[in-house]
Amino acid sequence: QEYSAIKLQVKEWSPEMAELVKGKVEDDAKVYFVPATLRPETMYGQTSCFVGPKINYGLFKLKEKEYIVVTKRAAWNMAFQGHFFGDKFPKTQDELPQVLEAPGSAFIGTLVNAPLSFHTEGIRILPMESVSAAKGTGVVTSVPSDSPDDYATLMDLAKKAEYYGIQKEWAELEIFPLIDTPTYGNLTAPALVKQLKINSPKDVTQLAQAKDLAYMEGFYKGTMLVGNYKGEPVSEAKDKVRKELYESGDAFPFADPMGKVVSRSG
Ligand code: ZZB
Image (cartoon, rainbow, N blue to C red; front, side, top):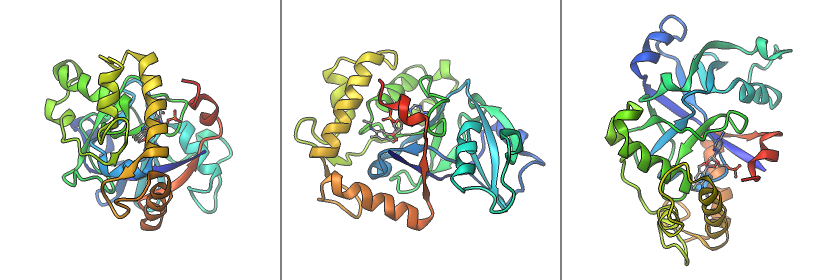
């Protein structure tokens, strides 16, 4: 299965990162967080972007004045897929063009611009404990309308904003309906979270079940309510939105050879 790697450009660093990038990244360079998604058709509904607070991330130089934030493991995969440096191929992970390393916690509060999102003012980098360092890019874009994990995490972040060291409003951006489904209406994730009585991101068994149900219902029975393919079945719109994102340069294809094996085990 192919992931789409979406480019979320940094608009304003968290105070901690603003210090760290000084002298390491040119002032006029572009830096992107790069989540991997299987649901490009839901990108209209991005309300935040998650990192694992304890996971280590690198800032890797992609080309002149362009950097990405992903795990080293993902950067290494990207190197094999031809996304870095045309000429000098890294022989080991240590040869990757990493300019700095930081734990996910350092990024919390960073403001990024998410392609296609209705929140054009930008969305925040927020912590999610269940992000896996061994899958995708270690960065996850959050779509609470259609991803039960994202919805449950955002509810928890808003409830315990102080504990997480975030501003409550960052977790409370408006959730717009994107996809209509016969069984769960137009807000599939909140409906499933309620129906399966999910109270927190720690309810992993129910969340795994909710995720499967949301995937199936969305893909086979969903109809787009927004965007250029409004009125079309999700099964047809998905590839069209993906193609659009690739052509605009806002995303690129990304395969995760190992991630695929672990990913459907939940
Ligand atoms: C946006 C999105 C919108 C997603 C949605 C899902 C849904 P899978 O099937 O297990 O491979 N994801 C990606 N990388 C990670 C990671 N390292 N740790 C935790 N979660 C990760 O899952 C792929 C999906 O899991 C990806 O697609 C991403 O979230 C998340 F409406 O991106 B998705 C019903 C799901 N809906």
